[in-house]
Image (tube, rainbow, N blue to C red; front, side, top):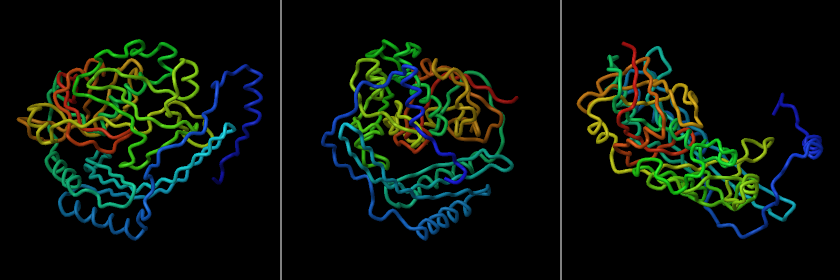
Length: 368
């Protein structure tokens, strides 16, 4: 890219040798990889995407008064890993994605949904309808009642809770004995309503991979099964450090970075309730739509303190308006034991695909 300085790896390698930096004990051996359907022949041209933006804009603009933001895009990626041990693995991937949002006046707070597929597909009308209906129901600013209450975490807020679990199941944090989950495999850590998986071989979704960025064959991984901690995730380096087997979860951020343990295909298993049913189960409380400061708090310890942008107040199972300057806080190892319901759909969100979660007795504060 213009303006980016080139990076030479040889001096770094020499310095690492001089400093006695330890590397993984071996390289992967070539094996037969599963054949995945990761690329679509027709992803969708620019004209198709422009028409889709127009359709989405027309749909929302005719139903809401707020500012409508629409985006679409397509990506074709060709990944190849070669090693001196003989691995030569290659994968062509396609991804067509879209997002839609309606902004509240004078703010960046919004109601939004995202959607992705290997080939072009129309943005689901039920998600456009969700955006319009939820925005219209919450257009009025209302006062909320601070204190312990029920909170419905939509995926764009709920990922902040999952982030703490990602940190705690990272092999580095387990090896260094700083994870609160060290030595707890087989224990009931979360509500039995929660199961969390990493599915790199699931080629019904875009981005599936048969091998990671170290050339190790990928495996599906269940981190939590009905709330029980089942395993941690590693790369070849931390597999070597911990005396465990590599599982194909070593990923690079970009070509200049070295692989490290990562959950690139994370999914929370959906439950049994629709969004509307979850509102009825809530009765009274707040819906967390988007998160501000998702990183805030001691993530490794499970602590969180998240601004809601926006938060939607619910009375008698019905959204009555938007709440400004509100905050939820707690600890995931306490709060994720009090799960009332899990949504019956998983949605694209930061860090993976997650359903909405309805939790009981969460600390909530709003401007008086």
